[in-house]
Image (cartoon, rainbow, N blue to C red; front, side):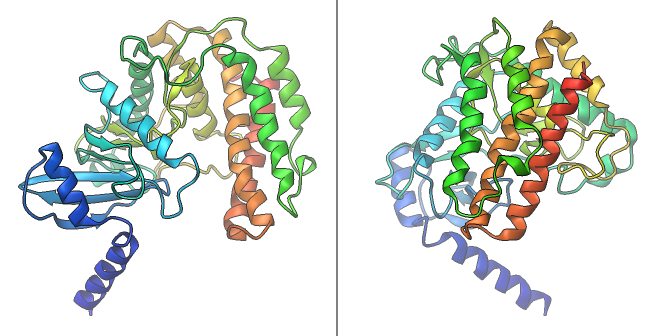
Length: 361
């Protein structure tokens, strides 16, 4: 029975990607890139934190991972893939843990979408489960928390100009655009029939008013990941170190303090009963204040500079997640998912309001 179930799972796995990725076409493309020869073998999808498709396979004694947009690509999906390629290529040789970029194709004519190949990562996602080495030691878990902070610190030290990333996002007016951009995102969900509206959320007006009144007058431009949290890093299986930061689709130029804000927006908060992103067991991981202090000490940034980002980040993340609720209200996505993400948006906006009244830093 176990073998029958395994074969059924493999068949289902193949159905999930076979019509989207033509291995013969991929092999011919790889021939032109000088990436081995002969057939592609052992193809299987990998689980991930996004809807993008990851296909691991072997060719000529080397293992590759292909990344492409989801089955139903969004209008911007190909551009997102091209941006990820550029960022990963730029990070080569840096201290930032990342998947090694091998080659990519920005023209969707080859496989139907843009795609790229990267090195496989020997690591695990802590929010899925901990190996015994990590689960049995609170000290190891503390080091895991320190490692994710250090990953953000390493990224903050990348100079986008020196890395050839001058065209990655617009820096002019970056601070001024943040609140209007994400307020407009929220209000735009009114186009979905049945959306419960701003009145079903904590005080959006108060959050936006505080952010506008306290907006920094200057910023320190750098490279930001844009979605930096525990689900988007992988740890080494035999140590507390990061194996790689993954899912670079929101990478851009901006103030790297946004990545610290994002980490504090998603880190377990003792004032909340039901964290969305967490690890079991949690004891040993640094507190919110400790991860912020570690980042600031390493980067030379100040608590006064960082405070605005600890309010902006939960507001921005909530504005993004509320979109799934709005689409669920209109019957376009499953209601349980929409309801769950709506609940998380509420907790994020509550967190933003709490950070206004009771600063983390």
